[in-house]
Amino acid sequence: MKQNSHTIKLTDEQQQKLIRLLADSRYTPVDVPHTQKAVSASNCRINLYNSGKCLVQGKGAEEWITFTLEPEVLGEARLGYEAVHDPESVEPHMGIDESGKGDLFGPLVIASVYTDAKTVAILQELGARDSKKITSDRVALQLASDIRKQLDGKFAIVTLGPEAYNRMYASMKNVNRVLAWGHARAIENLLTKVPDCPRALSDKFGPTHRIESALMQNGKKIKMDQRTKAESDPAVAAASILARAAFLNALRKMEKEFGIETVPKGCSARVKQIATELVAHKGPGILPKTCKLHFKTTEEVLLANGYTRSDLPTA
Image (cartoon, rainbow, N blue to C red; front, side, top):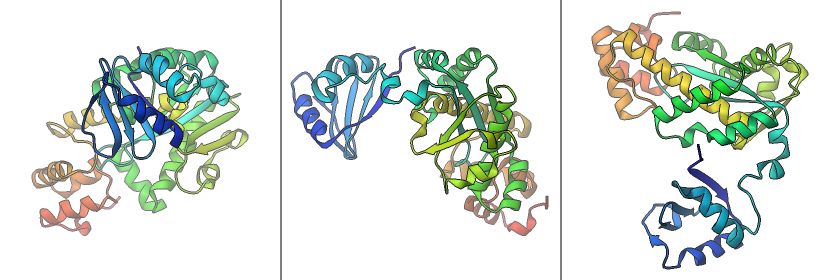
C-alpha cells in the first residue's frame, strides 16, 4: 500500500525553486487557504504552505516526489531513505502515542509499538503514518489490523475508560500527568514482551521529566527520548494508528451500550449537542461513564439541562 500523503519541510531557497517549478503550464492553480502556492497535477495535489511545509497528496504523490521534487527542488533523495536521514528510526526501539486526549467522549488510549529494521520496512510498505493524517476511520481501522498482524505481538495498548480517566484526573489534577502515567504504563507493559528494548520514543508534551518521573521499575532502565513531531518515526506512527483504532472501537462499543446512534469525536458543537441530549434522557450520572469531566463543555452540558457539577455522582 503506497503512502498517498507526504509532508516535507522546505528551506527558503527550496520554496522559491518550487514556486518557479509550479508556475509551469503542467500545473493547474487551485485556491487553498494559508498557502504560497497550491496546484493540481495529473494525479496529485501540491500545496506549499506559508510555514514552508510542502504537502503532496494523491495516487501519484510518491512518483512526483521521486522524479520531480527530489531532483529539481531538494537536490537529494529523501523518499525511501529515511534510514539515512534518521538512522535511529530503524534501530530497535519502541514508539508511544495516544488517542482521545482532545475528545470529550470516550477513553484515553495509549499504545506502544516495538520496531527494528525489518519491522520498519514492513510498516513503510503498509503506509503507516501519523494517524492524524488519516481522515477515514475505515482506513485507520484496516491499517491498524494490518499492522497488528506484522508486529508478532510486540505492542501494548493501555485504555483509560471515562470512569477510570475521571478518577485519575481527580487525583492528578493535570491532563499531562495522566498522559505521562499512561505512557509509562504502555512502556512497562511492552517491556514484559521485549525486555531488551533499549530505547523508547514519544511525542514531547509538557516538561521532559514528566514521563521519566512516571516510569516504572523496568521503564527506568531504558533510554527515554521525547521530541516534537515524533510521529515521523515509524514506531510512533504505528502506535498512533493502533491507539486511534482502539479509541474508535471504544466509541462504537459506547454507542451500543448507551443507545447512542453516533458518538462524535472531538469537542465540537455537535459533541455538545449529543452530550446535552444524552443528559436530558439519562440524567447527569451518564456523563462520568461516557465523558472526560474536566472539559469546559461538561459544565455547559450540565447547565443546558439545569444541573451543576454538584449533581454529578461522586467517585
